[in-house]
Length: 443
Image 1 (cartoon, rainbow, N blue to C red):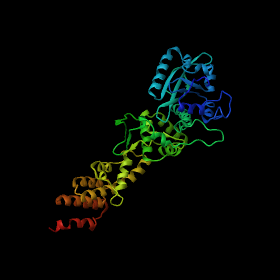
Image 2 (spheres, rainbow, N blue to C red):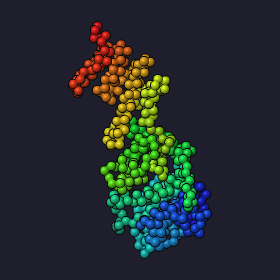
Image 3 (tube, helix red, strand yellow):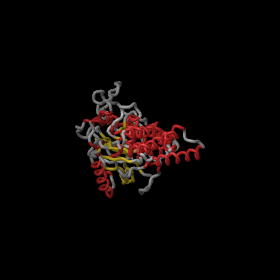
């Protein structure tokens, strides 16, 4: 590790000084941590664990790696590890790793590596990037796992899940320190803290311009362009965080999203969803020691619509002109994640239904008063669709038609509602609604 080369990047140094095993004189001044969480994991598990710089050149292998290959660690640093790869696989491995390093995307490949006895065995090699405060990769963390068979073949799902969990756990020990700009913790000293929101405000374009849509249908855009092909797990993960405008602990999130699974399996599912997420969508998520949340720069259409609804329901004078626009009416008319039936979605759906129902009626009332009758009719009809048996929604629609002078349409709305109410509940409309049409019926 002392031969890994000069490291001038302060964020890379933060990873290195906090994570590198001690091969120098271990004093408090020269090594900030005598034994970090990363070392404890990396040196105790039956996996080959390695780290690389942002350019892809390796600078750390754990003890398992040296024992398995029989070569000194320094011999595998940089690109020396290629000498351990079977000649038929070496070029493919080099190109694959160079591509991952260049595109800053997760790496996974299967190739043959030489064991200490000279026998080449098949291995699955995986790596995840560690991103700095500006979103760029400052380090890589990887694992190498020997396969149980002589030829590459599909691995059991539980094996894949276990490998994913190991790699994600290693990443989780490093990422918070990088995002908070910590280079380590002096023994006995409290950990340095930084508001993780600060780095997002200063972040580059990688995490800006991300929009998550929950109304009407789920969707994610980056820079105005849709991100296609997100897995169902990635969609659910982003949707959950978009519905919770706060930091959510991993335990609470995993238990809620996978309620039928054991705590362990739920945690594995969460880590797997995170590790397999598209790089651009992954930038929307902030991982902290406290849990997960969306970056402050990410916009969520539901949150914007909720703000509109809250203003409309406040005392007069607090709403904005834009709250009565066609776009605002359209936003309040949209359902939350239709065709999603997870319990955690349905609970939010009920809350949104009640909020938008009252807000749509407020829109209809204000638009009718200001003479924007066409838009008022759209809002009133949307309220009726939300709850067809709600009398106040029908009353607003009747008032709009009366203001337009469409008496026949007002009567048709009333008669249709009266028939529906009697058929479904055996009730009649209240006098309040009936009185709206008294003058018409008396003519």
